[in-house]
Amino acid sequence: MSKPPARNGAPQRHPGEEDDICPVCKSNRYLNPSMRFLVNPECYHKMCESCVDRIFSQGPAPCPVAGCARTLRKQRFRKQTFEDLQIEREVDVRRRVAAIFNRRESEFNTLLDYNNYLEEVETLTFNLLYNIDVATTEARLAAYSKQNATDIANNKALSARESASTEAQLAARKDQGRLRREAARNEEEEERREREEGRREVIDKIAHSTEDPDKIAREGQKVVLKKSTARRNATDRLRAQDAASVDNASVPLFQIAGLTPITQPEPDKAYDPFGGYVIRPTCFTLQEQYEHPWLEKAKTDAQIAAGGYDVGEYCARSMMEAFAGLGVFVEEEVAGRDRSPGADVGTAAAVVTGGD
Ligand SMILES: [Zn+2]
Ligand SMILES: [Zn+2]
Image 1 (tube, protein in one colour):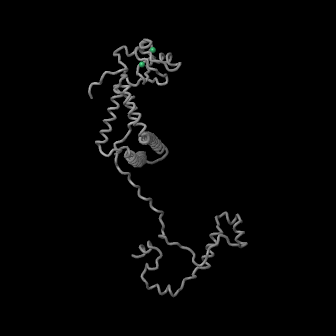
Image 2 (cartoon, helix red, strand yellow):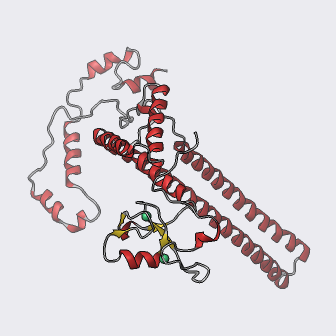
Image 3 (cartoon, helix red, strand yellow):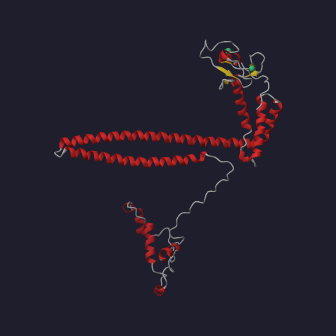
């Protein structure tokens, strides 16, 4: 970029010690270390906190810096982020422009279109930064913002969602790390405790038994070794699982624009072991209720019902047994014996299993 043109109304930076002196009341940070400087994005003239309190507490007032006289409000004063006020102002302007021109590359047909758009935006920003045609530029900005209000809101919501999901992922990863560290600490503690316990046991045994002390010590060592190996294997498995889940979590962080969304396959239907074949009584219809004094007694008797006895179940079984065999003709069955297996089988799945 070429050399910036002369600035009108932009703050002049004073080098050296003067940075620590309030241009309004001339108090020095050297004498008052708790002094804080504030700037107002209206003109970016800095002044100390007590000056802001004194001058602007009664409402809007003109900037006290000589030759400025812009009307400032107290609530817009804020802490200076960058030492160079020119940078402070540039960051503010860029943030404001970027909030309005928030189109994404994926919205453009070609890269050339997108680059042209970026160039246009940069020209507007440059004009605002160096006060070139400010009125025209502001008008263009306002017009664009009005015309594209919906798109701007949509893209804003989109980036908010993206940053929220990124933050959630970072938080999850942090959490996992913390849990892993905790687990490692616990494991170390456990191992130390077990070793201690094993040693104590061995000493106890040696004291109270008549066996060879060397043998007891060897056996005790073996037990401790076995335990720690088992635990190490378990934690190794857990760690591998953790690593796998971290890898999965990091995938969505990479975003490539312009990809078509992947359609999810339909979820599998519930498994039907009979392949649609329904076993339903054909010779009778099961009633909800059967009137019989004995059944009524069974229904209300706590001694019978306590065991989970179900009168409905009893009726269904009685009916099935009463009608069992009806509609079955022995001649047909006997004639069918010579037919190939599978022809009479009820379901397609049964044919497959019974066929070979
Ligand atoms: Zn001051
Ligand atoms: Zn000013």
